[in-house]
Amino acid sequence: MTPIRIAVLLLPAAVWGVIAALWTPRGPLTGAQALWSVVISAGVGVLAGRAARSRWAILLTPLAYATALELARATVSGPSVDLPHATPVGIVVLVTGRGVHGLLALLPMVVGAAFGHRRPARSRARRVAGRVVTGLATALVAALAVAVAVPARTESVPGGIAELSRVGDLAVMIRGRSPALPVLLYVPGPPGGSEIGTMRTRLGALEEHFVVATLDRRGGGGSAGALGRAAAVTLDTEVADVLAVTDHLRQRFGRDRIVLVGHSGGSIPAVLAARRHPEWYRAYIGTGQAVNLRDSDRMFHADMLAWARAGNRADLVARLERQGPPPWPDAYDYEPFLLYATAAYGLPDPPFDLFVEEYTLLQKAHFMTTMLDTWDALYPRLQEVDLHRDVPDLPIPAWFVQGGREMRGLAVPFASWYAALRSPDKRLVTFPESGHRPMAEEPDRFADTLAALIPA
Image 1 (tube, rainbow, N blue to C red):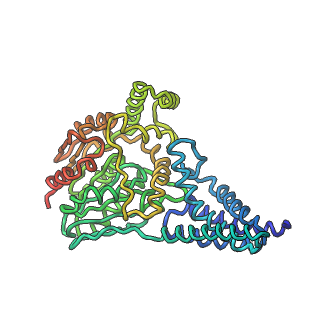
Image 2: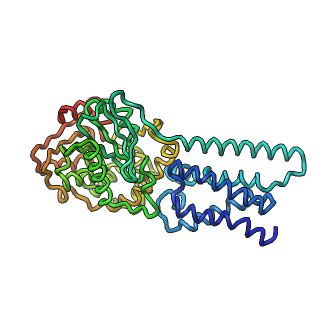
Image 3: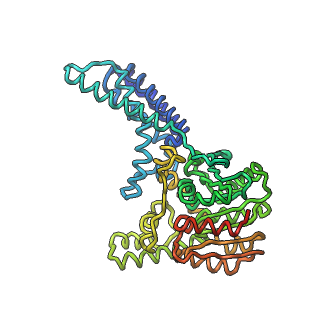
């Protein structure tokens, strides 16, 4: 090929790579983004193939796109776009991040270039093989386009309310037996967390007593597209998100006050929202309550290191000793906690409940990557939070549902904060056999407890 033809071949793919990096720096996260990625990439491939009139277009076009994409998003940070890590979590992130992006952009581009170059193979066998491979790849691209276009939905509630709603760029699942019931907003645990699958499949009993609104935190689930290029997620934006959804629910259902429930890491922005606008809430209910993440993580580190030494887990011991006590600067530094915390404390693994129709195919695929990207942006900014100082009192009822087998790193700071907390109605309900997730480990008991605390 001549230099001019090579330039004509590479330029459209490179331009599309730059546009994609600006538009979807972490890859297509929504169905619309995925469909446009497939269509435009296939079109670029066809144009490149026709311009080149060579099979080299099949290789060079996606290479130009990928190179331009990576260069244009070099300033974007987060596990999904950083250099891959050869660890269990790193491999999952690579497959569900760049791997999914490749299926939605590079594969359609290859197929388009294969159709566009129009140069038949010299032998009949190679022509037949090429047509078979191209046909299979085309069928795969078409199947992907159909799969990513299927929207999320939630099963209806006869006579009640069941919808996947949006408040700005945040996703909220709203379900209840009757719109007249008290309204409850649930804020899930990790940064970029989504627990709509767990709330729908395990905590359906709550819907008999409340209109249950489950927030997908910014960067997670249906709110994944809200993360953005800069991942500008702070504690203030997290609190603002809780308040925005709260106000939406108050207006939507005509309530002056609603019930606010926060779990684990989500309990920090939730309780801060309750303190900033107590007039919006009937009560605050914490479960798996976080208080001081710096102290918690140091206890986790000490406990996990002791567990690893006792079990002769030499690689884990070496890693924890090398890293030293937290806080740590990178999301991957916390990988030991993600992989081994429940085992170290003898607790059940967290339920992900991903295989439900409330999640689209892309939301299922990106569940880990978007959560870690948000974690990477937000978690270091939470290290200075200490509810002993930041929330010494709540002027509304403050009730807590805690597991009797809660991890020491959360149980110890909570006990001291709860003892000092001032509230007009402060209560603690303990499920002796539960760990960090009482609502998922004993869902019916959790629902009955909340119904008793908040009568209709």
